[in-house]
Image (cartoon, rainbow, N blue to C red; front, side):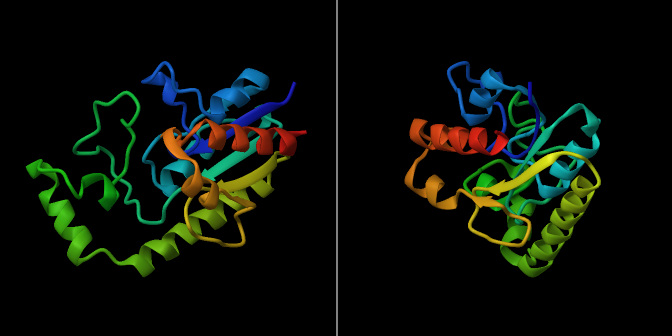
Length: 191
């Protein structure tokens, strides 16, 4: 049986840990293959890299890397989500806090509005993606790099941004059609 390591953000996380009826493409893969899913909603590219380094890759035949937004800032403890069973490892992104009235995030919102340096964070994001890619090249894993965000680079094998735009929903940010499409694509890739 194929053994699959999944690392990434909320697009690849197991939402059923909080919502019993949330069966997304990672759960569908887990019903068919031996899957270890280390993905965490809201995590930065840095934490995805840590997910890879937290496990023995020789236990797997395949790896799915679901890359996140370059606009996430890693934090040890999220000021709003640290006690949430699904989002406990969440990092900072402006979209998650912009409408919050919680005073704990007021200075963070100000940082994003006035000081956030997009070019810098894009550069760091690319460096981490490069490290992920190069680390995986040293393994025997058959690897695919995917994303649901609107960017392209040499490391991304499959971009699901258009699918996400047409079939967004609650589970893994996709509706049933979107989740089934990703599941079928990845099952075909796994072989």
